[in-house]
Length: 401
Image 1 (cartoon, rainbow, N blue to C red):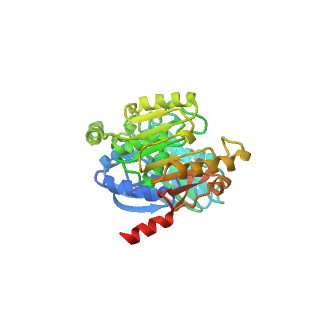
Image 2 (cartoon, rainbow, N blue to C red; image 1 turned 60 degrees about the horizontal axis):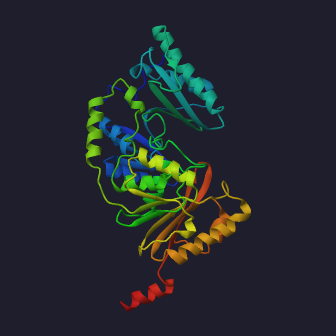
């Protein structure tokens, strides 16, 4: 039998340990800033994520408060494997009994990016075999598999011959905030919505118009950001709550401290949609998020919206090929550009779109272009600075000051 390996983390551990927060491509810098502001240490960004150091309380805080994190995982072991046999042996030598007993349940998720191994489901099964075989040999009994509410969620990433074994501390992905119970077709993800707001540079004293709001997710995330409402406050369950080192008193303390930091800013946020049934769904979500008195909902065509504010922000998530006929895209996006020029002088306007044809048809030159993903769709997040008068006039005014 191989010697006991040294684990990076066990449930008996106290003090600081390494964690990783995963996110969507393009949101790494936003996530890194969030973790730093929250108090994380030794931050190291990587593709679609950021690693950092903190204690058990910070693990709870990260799950509760990070807006652009998909999940928080804890690395426990790393090894090399070139085939199924060495992979099985590497998983089997991990001291799983430090985390669970044979009476507990597990769920294993593998992500495979390697020519050495088969598909993810097969490797998850192989890892499960190794784990339960270890328990059978030692105790004559084995943990069960529970895909819904396991005691221990195990996340394994395979890249070429590098095997990273992690514990999933979050459970369901963190975009499942708990407030969105009713959605329209192709709703935007909560994490992406929060990322759009944070990337936009919007400040709470400015008006924010979500002119094609759908389920209201962008407006809701903006209001929660502005008033420092923890994004996980409505969630009833995190994976760490089933760990044997779960400290409910500490979690309650972390939650209470986060709630005490909630602000009550008066905000000027407008969430509009052209379809009345969609607005009704939006209003249900606002009620769930306790934001009905914060966000104004309107039911009109975006092209009819007027504002008396001289500056502010517009964030649009318009149809981009999934919800609109292709022959209509060019004209639709041209109308958006015309609307920006006509009625939003002095505003900063942002659009997220996966439609190259739509982007080309806006008729405006973006001052910033960010690549993001909305699900599997590669998108561009485009910023348009809508000057009052011509842009040339702005330089003339500066020179004459």
